[in-house]
Image (tube, rainbow over all chains, first blue to last red):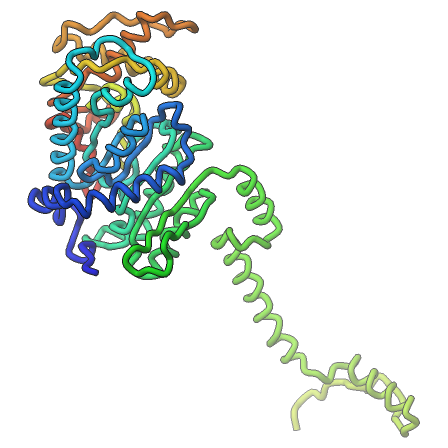
Length: 313
Length: 125
């Protein structure tokens, strides 16, 4: 499988031609739709109540379309302006199609299904690079999805881009931007197992609870990774408690500092004991005592016992 | 860009202390009517910064005559008219061209074809 991530930044790869190709490929559309539906299922949104969902790496708005069908409002951001223009075109066409089908009955509010089907595109778009942190007020979005975008953060395309720093910045901004109790489902294609570990590590470090769901794990082609993140208050408290005890495995950094500190102290102690030597006065007295008990002839304990000689001879 | 999106956006340029609310310098504004979704509005209402909405409406008024007059504070109970007005302001008014301005650093974020450009330069990360 070819990896476009290796060819350069996403904004360059998804140029006008590539964006058109992406949007018109029926295979791509089908795959994206399937993934989005699965991601929404993992979000566990209440579909009876319209939510405001952030779509990171929305591309040509394929995932947004699925969200719309479920009755949600979405804000898409992407780093490629060409992709966003394609998305805008699609939203515009969609609105026109709806007008043709339904006529001009938009002014009045309608209830239930008919309302959802005939309403105009509910998406909004923004040009932004997720690796520089999300520019929103805290606790605004009900949920967040991201389809096939996260892996782009694992590659560095400029001297100032550090994958770990970009991922951490992204996740910490996501943590603040999401409503408490909100969920985020991010589907990504890791190139190696290390990438998947790096991504989950960065996500848990900023305070998210959750893990990776792998669909079709035994098929190389159909395999899909979904990072499901949530605010699990219980686990967070547990983590903090564990951190205090220094027993947590989830709290890597502070704990590892503790461990290295402890081992260093141990390393210092060991040579000191060696330097003192095994033949301390206590040891010699103890040995003489045991020899005496065995009935052997042992010199009596005096002030000279085990006394160090002034010089070596 | 809808005003709802504007309500959520803030500048995250490095070193910005108060990047909210972003000022709007509009060039073209479009109205695209859509059916009122009362439930959606009530859902987003607790998260809305109402003062930022008022500010945005005042900044857009010279470019758009049909903007309704909103009360200076949001009442506890919303009557239907206010729901419709709020929905209109948040969802149907689209800023097509212009720019957003950070209140503390005056950094400009251009809006072209209804898409705000929030990309940061290398030294702003």
